[in-house]
Amino acid sequence: MTRFVAYFRVSTAKQGIDGLGIDAQRFAVANYIAGRGELLAAHTEVESGKRKDRPELAKALAACRRHNAVLVVAKLDRLARNVAFISNLMESGVEFVAVDFPQANRLTLHILAVIAEHERESISTRTREALARAKERGVRLGNPHLGHDGGALSRRGAAVRQERSARQAVELAPVVRDIRAAGVTTYAGLAKALNDRGVPTINGRTWSSTTARRLALRIG
Image (cartoon, rainbow, N blue to C red; front, side, top):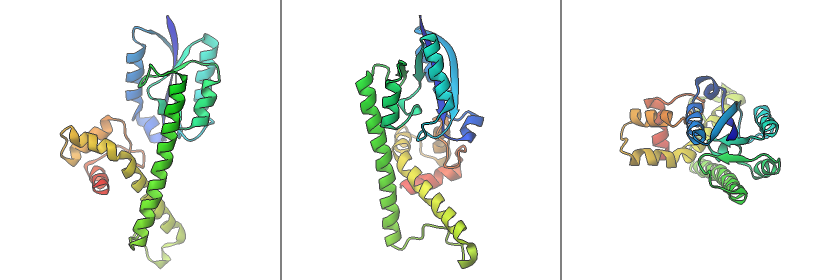
């Protein structure tokens, strides 16, 4: 019987506290393991996928080596959207499987990591270009209610929030289109669908009709 060690990751403390995204990962992993083996341990990380120094992942890998177990994750991007990181992991001597693509071999995993990293970089580039074009058209990217005495830090913070909102709209556009295609026509329904999928807002919170409406209007 195969022994497994599970690794779960969420990007924000809010997700870690409330379990947003974690339940879906646990469900996927439990379904995969059922009938295939036993789960020895599970490690949960609250950390951005861009960082490589993740202690819980290190513990999970150590447990795999100690028990000759397989590392299992719900999705490949729970490990990292970073080619170098995936390459190093594959060279660590630990066998691992992503539930969303269990038949993938080592070459496939490397290719998927390349695609994921490319998509992340493309989204960042598209967002910067979209904001630059908006600025050229005279669109104010910060809070229009801030006066000259509002302070440079406040204006910069508003600009950062605006950029994050724009980036999120680009990233979630395919998800929102899928939800709409499934017959969801209200903002309340969109909010529920996003929450059911474990998708957090830019502040790591759950969606409401108001925040779902703002997202839908940004996407168009």
